[in-house]
Length: 88
Image 1 (spheres, helix red, strand yellow):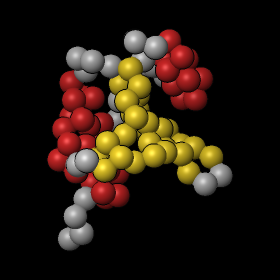
Image 2 (image 1 turned 90 degrees about the vertical axis):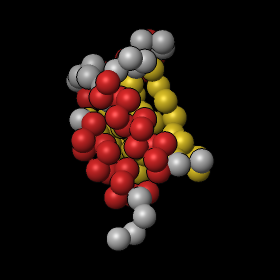
Image 3 (image 1 turned 180 degrees about the horizontal axis):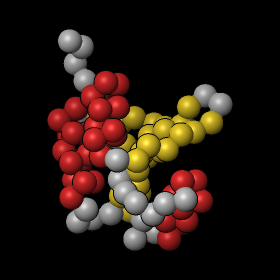
């Protein structure tokens, strides 16, 4: 597994949409921070403060000059495949 800094997945155990993102991370052999919004209230507060939503999965991407938040499992999976997948 390759550990990637600057990416954090906001999620919770038992979330089917989150499981799809976890499966993609495993297939890509990529490890990122996992932030369970129900295990740690700070994670929930950060998610709501930044996005105005409590929905997961949500990927926080730290970039030069700031951060962006990406909701929706299909969008997150497409991003991960584009960034870490094998070149076509």
